[in-house]
Length: 107
Figure (cartoon, one colour):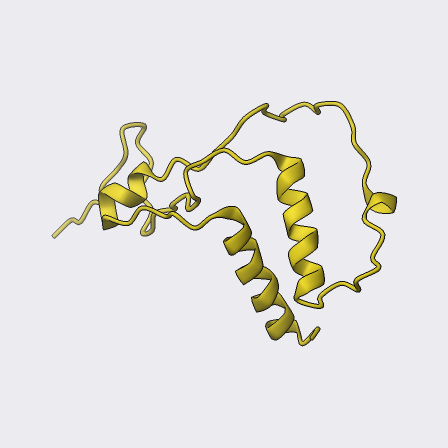
């Protein structure tokens, strides 16, 4: 018996997995993201309260490959699992910072 793998239209085999983009489906400002992340890393004691973020920031013009706006298109996730992420940015970054602190033992 000859078994053939299924293929996608361009003739490549279909991988045994699927990648989903998981986000809150809402664009976020990058500087807001960085500010919230630094606040939550300090609150979780991953970084010291007096950490000098400004000394480490370097704002540069748009680079090749940068996009002015991006967001997570969660349509495939919703279609396949009926799940629509809705976690606000601060809540997600807080959970990440707390997980990081616990996992790496920084607190």
